[in-house]
Length: 106
Image (cartoon, rainbow, N blue to C red):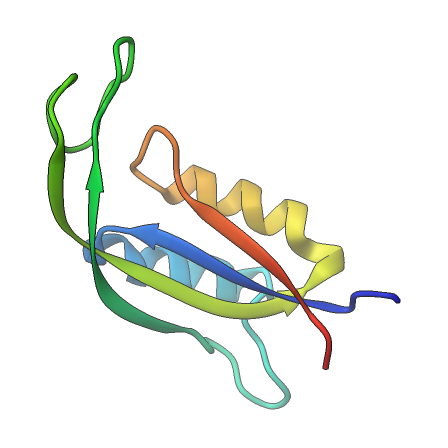
């Protein structure tokens, strides 16, 4: 089965959504039919503990932290996923951004 589209989920602070949305739109990654800038996001709660050697955006090494962030979601062409991942990493403030990529069957 050939995968044409994927769904991308990215966890990030809310203040980075607009820049990421604009940059993704600039490369045509978030266009659906005759619409561009097509994304959704929701506020989520999470936990993390920075390990030794990390440089956390938020929290202290060795301590469990919790907080809110946003889950940004969008559909894009699978053939563009490497460019999309590279762009996300260039905007994202986290040392280890969470980027989930799921194939779409329809």
